[in-house]
Length: 123
Image (cartoon, rainbow, N blue to C red; front, side, top):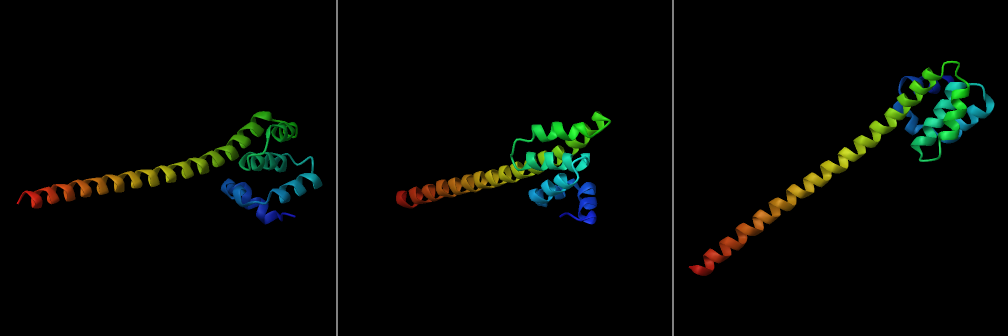
């Protein structure tokens, strides 16, 4: 079971949701089904894990008397997920750029070697 300190940190730093165990959130939702924020966190975790989260998100919204607040919180946790995904994509793009640069460097070195070999052969 998730303790209060861990839950509080999770609310303050939504990026920690990635490290949170899915089963802990399920247990909290089972024990406190009326706890809308826990329902919302479970929906966000399901989205991160690639599990169908729409039903859970709808269920979470039922526990908010201000649906706009619930939607805003869900977007906040989703934005963290999206930002993490963007960071991964950017890191992969940087790797590709580095590989392309090294390929270009190797090609230029190969071209120089061919030119030097031709020059030596002509001598």
